[in-house]
Image (cartoon, rainbow, N blue to C red):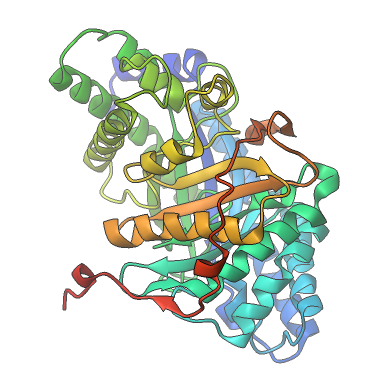
Length: 454
């Protein structure tokens, strides 16, 4: 049972420390919407999403009112669309039409984002996969709420370098297609290694084929809560530091568990997982960078940053799994640049570089996230950065991701402005030495030896 002390404590977290439920995400299977006729497929998709999600936003608002817990986003994830469109999409424009259908359905039910314009190509690409991937720039330019993801690698299959090379070009094309919005399309496009089936966070959410017809996944967040807790133990040893993070993560996860169970009951949809991710916002005090400072670093990027982030990520997971039997998704610490005011400041003062961020991704929950780079960065260089990150995920048996924004017409010293949760980002310099010959070799980088566990 939750006692009165915990109620007061939770209220203080919400009012003073930016605790929120970042998202309720309704996963919806579209497998039985597959049809060889494009128009019938679109009709089935629209009907399925609207019928399943018609009460999602209202339910979220009722839970907010009942428990006084802010729920920032209501979202939908669907089955990867390269599977759904394989029978009816014969051109890039056909897939763009499916993206428009998803966007219209998302607007009809009032959700903030819809994820699942996706392809899983870690070992190879079908013709449908490739068509969807090539349609991404036009699809994201033509829609407002659709998000896209592509899984390029896994520990069991290796890295699909053909897809990595292609995605470098697609990211560039997406930036140019949405140049009038500071290349916003790239903020809704992420590539993965070891993508989880149950991630509720955008842009990487999709409804995996291992999931039920519909599922409720909840993502909670609380960088400000953790930061406040750590400020009370400044100068204490690592044992005290770890216990403080773990206990705080436990409390935050209990809030997510409460919301998830209530949403599941009200919508009559099975509860899936709680994703406890320290996902920051541009709001002052709601920053993973500020947590690292509270741990004793002058700025993120200083020596010791990777060790501090590893400790943070591990203790967050340990606290989460004690609070819920179904912790999943990405659960841990996110280190996006544009969405974290402290990270932005670290980049602007020169403490944090792209190379240091890559090192930090070895121990965090995602990877190179929401990083703006010069618009003239070659596609091959983007592919090289992706390949490096895929290798980290593959070898370390963890999820890694890349969400780069090669801002069209902008260079180091400029910034991109997105507003809202996406914030703004300074343009970061990129190593200018070429990797074109390497990424253009074609084929696959094989799985590491430790992947053979049968």
